[in-house]
Amino acid sequence: MTALQMDDDRSARFEALYGAHRRSIAAYVRRRVVEHDVEDVLAQVFLIAWRRFAMIPPPPEDRLWLFGVARRMVADHRRSTVRRRRLSERLAEEARGPVGPVGPVGTFETTQLRVDRALQALRPGEREVLRLVLWDGASHAEAAALFGCSANAAELRYRRARNRFREAFLARSPTGRTPVQEISSSLAPRVSGGAQPRGGSMPRALITGITGQDGRYLAELLIGKGYQVHGMIRGQNNPKGRIVQDEIPEIELINGDLTDLSSLIAAVEQVQPDEVYNLGAISFVKLSFSQPELTADVSGTGVLRLLEAIRIVGGPNNRIRFYQAATSEMFGKVHEIPQSETTPFHPRSPYGTAKVFGYYTTLNYRESYGIHASNGILFNHTSPRRGLEFVERKITNAVARISLGLQDTVALGNLETSRDFGYAGDYVEAMWRMLQRDDPSDFVVATGTRWSIRQVLDLAFAAIGIEDWSRYVVSDDRFLRPAEVDQLVGDASRARDVLGWEPKVTFPQILQEMVRHDIELEQAKAGGRE
Ligand code: NAP
Ligand code: F7E
Image 1 (tube, rainbow, N blue to C red):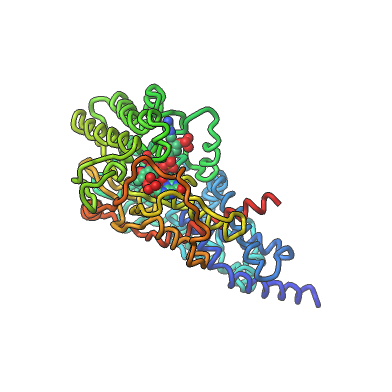
Image 2: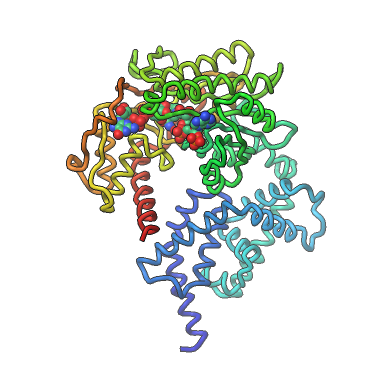
């Protein structure tokens, strides 16, 4: 076989690999990076695949190999703001090219905004070839292999994409505004009356509980909306700080603890936030029975301290908006079914009583000082980022381990109790929407459907093809509580009507995704031990 034939053969095999796996790799990447970076990450994955073609195992293992590369590229991508900056500069230079100067050069941020807008105007294939050639330095032959065309055609495709990029970069919008003005306005919160960024710059948010499930989803949501996000981290050299930073490099971490007023004042003073989301808490109900005083201090008095910090730093014309993570646990021994904003509270745990204190303190600061403070009364919500101590994640993780032969049974407490479960990614959207309204208020956020722990077991075991789970589940009194809440189910019609919020992901969908995620996680851990 001649070198040329070998090359043709390689191109054909590569094309087959690309055709077979691009969709699933794209879906994987799309869930992990912001939309306009998806094509870039994909281009990197396939460029590596082309360069290391000889190392790719035959089907079906090729798929796993590609996922491994994609995982690394996503991690690299998240770390690399420098890379993003370099690309923007290259593209901006490219656009200025032979047509001469493009008006004021502007700051890095304004260049970035123009570049992003111009990239958005391109078709995905155009973005891909531009990034591949201009950014990753791929040759036209390499691009050709990726697209399954000749090197000449790839070069043509690249030139066309570059010209279209240049046009879009230079274009004025139909409103007559410059691309920068256009984008800046689209970054501002979209619901009416949203918090305006100070001094015309990015809006700033401070999140307590950044290492928790909701903190991470909320941070991603806000970053996607153009916020500068500061996450409060407690303790000395807290290892979770590094994990969060690796996962979401755009977050700025700031020290502070809800039990320490001076640290909260310092944090609010330093960040000068437009919005504060108080998600920090001792949130595990069972633990609150054995550490009631700590729970009251963090989850209850902590709210008061943070509001004091906001009152002190924000001064008389306080513009800081505040979100308090209230909870369905406040309804406890329920007075009606379903529960809404008007249902009386009857908490059944130290956690519930602390949260009732936080709720009324939030209300009190709104009424006494006119602070824009709102309570989100959220029912249970979950995700693959849920702590392993909570029942639904404990179950999905155990199911994953059982399916891999790493565990025989799972020990649980009360199986008859039920909860209204939703998806955390949906619920953080409701938090944000509350703070974009002119009037602060309190909202129930729930799905309106209830699942017993038995049903959770049905769903999770069904995901690995087991119908009768009875031999895998053992009863253990250590997981029972001194008092239980049984009938929690929320009526979120006000959130739907006023905030335009509704859940998008159903509980069975998210639970299935959690089982899948936990299988991957446990496989990776087991692989690491070998
Ligand atoms: P989570 O995963 O348990 O996270 C709790 C967060 O609070 C962690 O980041 C933790 O930091 C932080 N924290 C604990 N003690 C602190 C202290 N002394 N000072 C500052 N931060 C502290 O909780 P989540 O599920 O994301 O829930 C977020 C909030 O919503 C919580 O307030 C919870 O009570 C409430 N809520 C949750 C649900 C739900 O179903 N998820 C429903 C209703 C309400 P470390 O990592 O350093 O410990
Ligand atoms: O318990 C029963 C347990 O600990 C749910 C927090 O996010 O949501 C969460 O609180 C139910 C309880 O969550 C086990 O008795 C049975 O009835 O997962 P959980 P939670 O208490 O509902 C509310 C809305 C919050 O605000 C909280 O922050 O499951 N259960 N067997 C068990 N629970 C656990 N944890 N472990 C068991 O083995």
